[in-house]
Length: 129
Image (cartoon, rainbow, N blue to C red; front, side):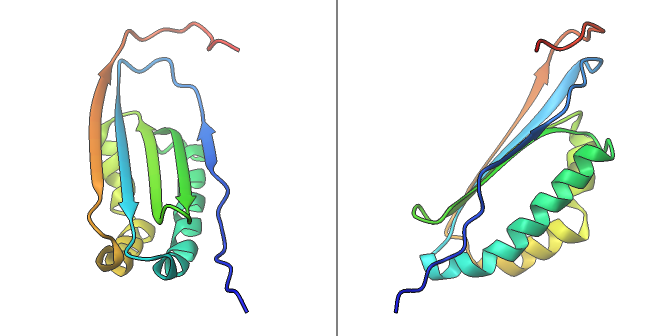
């Protein structure tokens, strides 16, 4: 009998904030040690997704995110754009994120993390459709 791991469909959410003059982008790629260690990641990944959805809806500084759980490649990828680094740091300090990282950190084989600050001219123009 074959065991099939659950999957999470790639998630993408965004909202417009054209009044800001800068933004903060964070990208992470978390490879896990084996496909069997993917299963414990799934409930945490779903909690993280719900937390990101709540943050974007509550105007917690999150402008966009993409979360991908790639079972065949044994990795989780998250890209997020924030109003500023302080908004990102506040979300990283939440119980949801701390719990996921403390539980799953030992099961990650390396990992890459990238940050970038983006400067642009603020505008009141409506976003392009």
